[in-house]
Length: 67
Image (cartoon, rainbow, N blue to C red; front, top):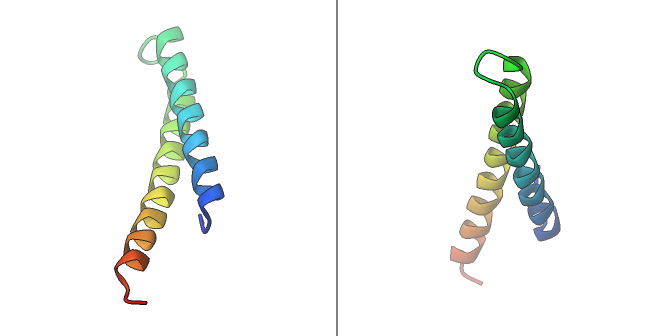
């Protein structure tokens, strides 16, 4: 779980790396090849996106709370 801005930035970087890796696989292998690998990367991308969304939501809630 992402709890700090540093972890958030690291997760964003990981997300970019995963997307680049998926794009490279899609370019190198036609549909039907490396399907399990592509699916695994998509699953990792979804997990990181979910963690980013949770962190963003928690930051938004903190910003709305009165001091």
